[in-house]
Image (cartoon, rainbow, N blue to C red; front, side, top):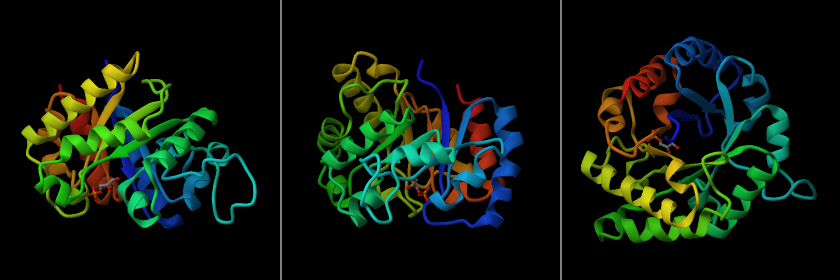
Length: 244
Ligand code: 13P
């Protein structure tokens, strides 16, 4: 069975004062009994680690070390206390022109450091409107998920770009169709592909979490805005724990 996991992506938000949100989330995460991960900005990772919730990073460089001003390697993020690293978030694909090949290389760097990669895929609004969603997803899976991926080192997050930060979500039928497609593609491509956890991301909040988690092949969520406050994210973690 794929493992359930609730992941919060703080993006470029949070300073030391916000560590209290992680402390406040810890008892909920512990009692819910599902894996819970917060990915704060890299500046907070070392201080966030050890507060009772697993901590991840939002990006890494593909290399180990060297002349790359401003970049952080997966090894450095592991050293700071990260257990997971997000690769291929649409904001990095858009803002930093990251390609599928870049994301595959970063994912291999995550594995090299002994961490789990959370590989993000998802179509744009124009692609959605043109009915190209499954074609886009297939191409992104083929290009950004390296052979060697399995449940022990990889999670895949489906985040339709038009649903991120907009309050819009696909219908549960649309989420079900895309997740079933991703599951089938991974099962075909990888020996243990069917066991990889699949997350939905895009405007998940406490009020829609339960219906999204009831969808077949949804093993958790990648949450942006609603992960910043423990009072918002805690109920999402609890909804995941109670989902069948
Ligand atoms: P929102 O939950 O704010 O829509 O963000 C989703 C996301 O991009 C998480 O990585």
